Length: 159
Image (cartoon, rainbow, N blue to C red; front, side, top):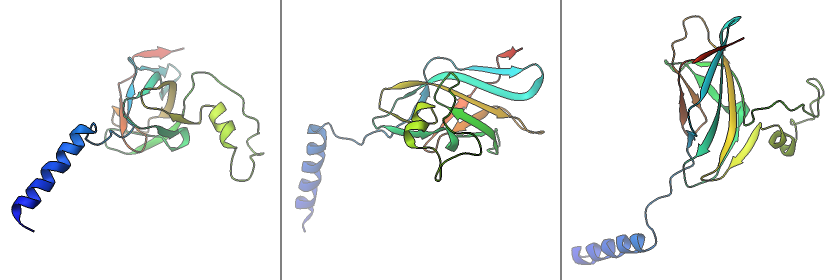
């Protein structure tokens, strides 16, 4: 192929991309919707809880599973974590020793805020709780698989 033909094809392809809205879609990405509230308990000095809303600022739907979120310290070490996309407590249908084979059904996980599909531009309530280990370096980040959220230090002590 001669250079003119290759150059012409490249130009045509780039014009087609621009005409179609071009560019790649941004993968789903979580951001804080407002300022997160981070608490520590006065009688549990190594425990932390963040309560906030998160929003999907990307162009694609995110599938988020609370059990797969990992809070990491400043050195990247994982911390004992629990998280969900809810600000309230909801009682599950099964006791701790009565889980169905394969875990709870997806409808149950969605009802409890344990697993969600968050469309582009959508926001949901969120909480995460973690325990700092001796020698843990703050600040921490919440790793959700395709990215992470920076968590500020605790701003209040809960009684």
